[in-house]
Image (cartoon, rainbow, N blue to C red):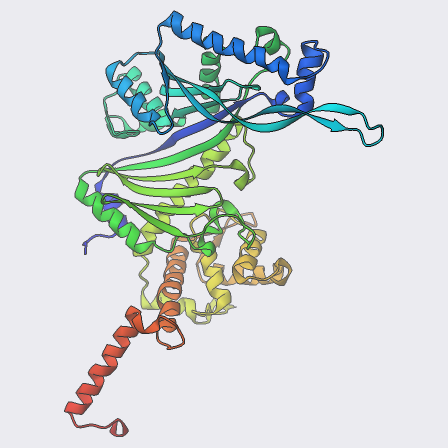
Length: 537
């Protein structure tokens, strides 16, 4: 056992605390060439072909591959053909260690991968019986060309082009590599930590650099390399509006808290895991980014503790996205929200939506850390407990009690402590979450019930109303009360009662059931030694 809480460890031993984009995986696509009709327009109306056919795509592909080979020969760039199970990252790190260019193409990798292209099939007109060609999507295996680059501002990254029409590209970059480059250019002393920063003489300057990695800077960098590398479309195609646009395939938003010594970090993470094994339950994950979870919501809702060697990682999943927390290289606590589909949160995929995704990802990290910190530090004085659970009269107003164990009260308190409650919320937000937690239709928990519950919470001091508005926010006392009540109910009372009855299939083997049986046996032995029968008690 350790002598410090999670909050104390974070306050006393963190030497650097920064948040920024970690890994960003982008899609470069031709928006006008995503449908068969768009492809037909490109070949017939733009290029003047008599018919749209895949025969017209082959010369484009051959010319693009020839341009890549000529580029590699002219610039004396190695071309590596990856085999099926080769680790591309290991090859890249090996080459980076041998040569560290300021800017340029490190090497070109070639790998066969699945790709969605267009095929022509014949269809029949049901009225005339005449056949006609039809362009439709089809998956094929084709060569993908990886351009491994070193950028002056963004550091190592890669751009991957498909060799088949419509030549979709992928871009993978790292925000911490961007930060390292910018720190070096500014002459600020720092020590790296894999894809992170271990030490920095100017912490606020580092945070400013991470904040400045905007969508505009990212797009400008990508456009710069598109102009330098072989391009599958001609200048005439691009002038006619057939240009790539960028969308977000995956975004990782990380908060890194560097600890002053490995022992403090290991103690911290062991406490985090021990106290938060229930974070993945649907009733908790339901408030991630204010999204509703129903029986139809895809995904596996659970908390997973994964171990590689002796380093554990904590995972909480929501649909296709997740929050991961781990102790990085024995030096830093990394909390990382990975968004794999922006549609999970009602946000578009285009790169211009990056600021909205940043706000969601960083808020998720902060809220998770806040809940983990409070989870150990939610002790209440007897007076506070009594004031919450008993009726009160405050400023002449009678306040109903919040009864511990009552389903409606416990659901109400659960909305205050789950990790992605908005900083400010309204009556309608409470209605949606309460209906979800109670498992009732929205109309069964109407505005009147929500107003009644908001009044109870406000007069008991658990929430406060913002001046001149109909918005509320949770008070520090409210969060502590909610956390304690919910934890006692979910982690002690409910499982404890289930273990005390033989109706629970595994009850005899559960810890609490064993403890109660041991207590019963000890009492029987004590009574027997004192020669007291149960009737004499």
